[in-house]
Length: 330
Image (cartoon, rainbow, N blue to C red; front, top):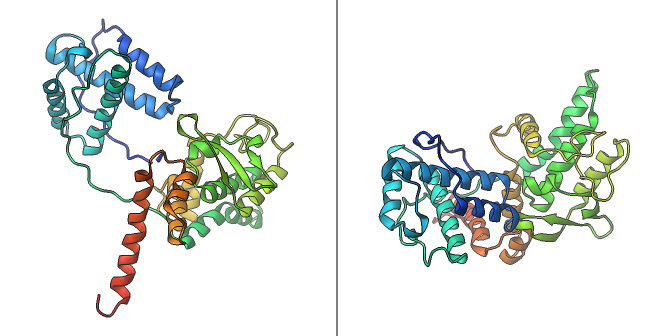
């Protein structure tokens, strides 16, 4: 779970040396991320930045590129102190060392090193942050917002040139909430992935892992209403959600995020919320209604149950608040 992520400022890295040549180990690792692990462009960019940042620091401090097989824990302690002087958040530091740990696991598998020197390195502890989610009423208001806005525009005599975009947005939000999808998974849906009669969709998640999950009738109806406005409904490998009515390209995650802000404002919600909050809401509402943790894990496409378990803390915290407010001897 995929797991959404706060923006972190870059550390004060030294200037790049003009004669810096590509590191073959790093190049192979980045290719491994793209080809073997099918990591997202966001993950590859973050990992590449972290490795480049360490390499630049090592050049400045040690006067040479990092000799990865012979680096020791003290080298990484020095890098940790450097990051600390840059006043980075603990999450930003953790992200950089996550990239370095993943890189060293790759080197171990390739036989370049025997073990990782970062294994026992202690990092600043991250505060436990529970995912934010919408109440069922807030979720319903957000799901209505695209078509409410369209109806208002039509009533004022100023109908939009592309009403299909409002129906597309409504269908995307319904689908994300109905299925608990990541935004990349929703944008990547193909027409052939929708099993209309069985009310199932095939989802391509992280690492090219596929899962088949139920989709609710309101989401399917929203997709039908959207397709009805297109010159021709998508078929085969064409995207379910198009960038434009006459396009064959999928709508981008960036466009969905930007248009979501207007619908959040219309629903009276925080405009800084992301589409991922609908995924959080999906999981929380299922657990609140008695769904078992393993089923929610499969629906979300989490590789590890521990990732899903964080949602049980949300429901526990809610129950505690209800108890404190309602019980006479709380």
